View (cartoon, rainbow, N blue to C red):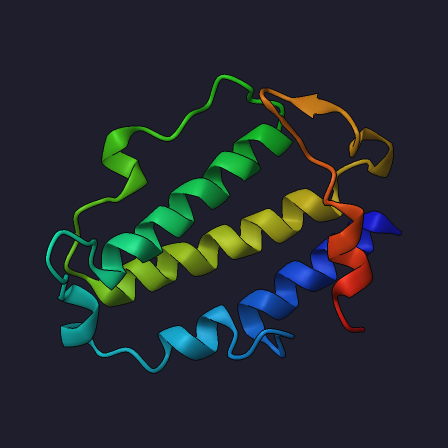
Length: 131
């Protein structure tokens, strides 16, 4: 039951309809290559932020697979890139892999510690998300 909810929420936030407004993909589809490559002052570009999202999804994927030694390197945390299409493709790939990993993850293991974090999604998150 919890696995199905987690999967549903991840799919809705990523593809829509998301409870909070536009989904990740709906938002990314509105960004031009020029906008995505810009950074303001000392901030990261949108392409770097997409890479950051992908890196931390890959972190979760590796932890779900039992690889507790996996970590996100500085190089992967905000990867340098100018290719919006490639960044979005990587993010979409990480979404598909994450959904596959979660779908096959045993529900009884949700309360296990994985490295330094607990995989259990907070109960308030499932209570406050509209069906």
